[in-house]
Length: 434
Ligand code: F0G
Image: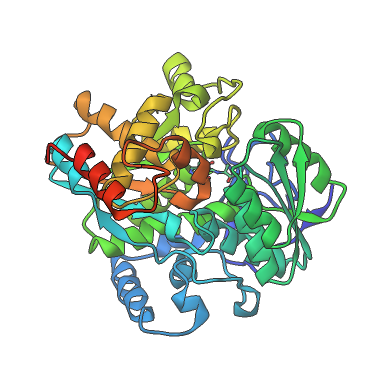
């Protein structure tokens, strides 16, 4: 198996999340040399950090917002003190991150919540949260001298990998489950110049196959089993805390698929706590589609000890995953933050998505699980009306246009004659009551 040296990234080491072994060399699958479990990035020097350094960094990060240097403009690399070291010439960035926090008014009223916000990660360069992770990991690939990168994907990762590879003048190889990726995401990967392989299997099968292929073909693995992906994605916690003026919300709710993103979010908050930036962490809750709920089952059936795999089925195709790679990390995040794990039905997802849309906040179906899940968490009393809640919307609404067109409601009229009389009469008939 090919080995990589990571010589440029001197400030961190890789540690196994299963047996805790600190790795010497890391292989191309990013697995523990002792037990085969996933790895995580840790920073041994942080033990010496003082509360003053947290204050200093808060100020420095704020100052960088007026800088025009690419690594300061990036919502990932702005926080580089808490990331693996990469030489500036190897940083691949397209101003990822920098996503808005928006208030949800109607949904807050309906749920009687006083503070309900979304962090809209769909506003990233390729329309999903993946860009923060891909910026970090592809920069490592460049530092390692790779010219090919590869991923398996339900669509968003492939769009992001293809775009960042193109921007870095690298080549990308993406494996997709045939017929199970929204056309918008597929079109992105093609437009950005990826070599797209549709496979007669599901996402889990694509990822398994990619693991075999990267051992025989020199492509750098960019799925979230690559711990550098999570380092990029954890920065959403830093950016969110800046946007909330370092006032910690009670809850952050995120969708769960392969479970890299929830793991990254948790890692970000727990590192802020460890370093004295914040004195408490939000409860991080993970929501899955009922037809693709291996984490929910794992928690319910054996309290998170052993993954319950399944054949996934959901119209929220981004999270149609039955064998999530980062399940152990996600279980740890639930435990370490006191979060909950819920599943929501197809109808609940569609309803929540429509409600978000009706507030002018578009997102893709997988992202709408967060609002659907919040409703359940309010009903069971886990979320209190006085709590501050942040929903992480992971993807842009235009990622899955077919889903919306299939759900079009009573305000989609016609075709009518292009004649003012006909149109006005139709409007008067429909809106007779108001
Ligand atoms: N939301 C969206 C829009 C996604 O695309 C994904 C994952 C998730 C949520 C779940 O995140 O896997 O880290 O738990 N999409 C991957 C992909 C699998 O290939 O684009 P996760």
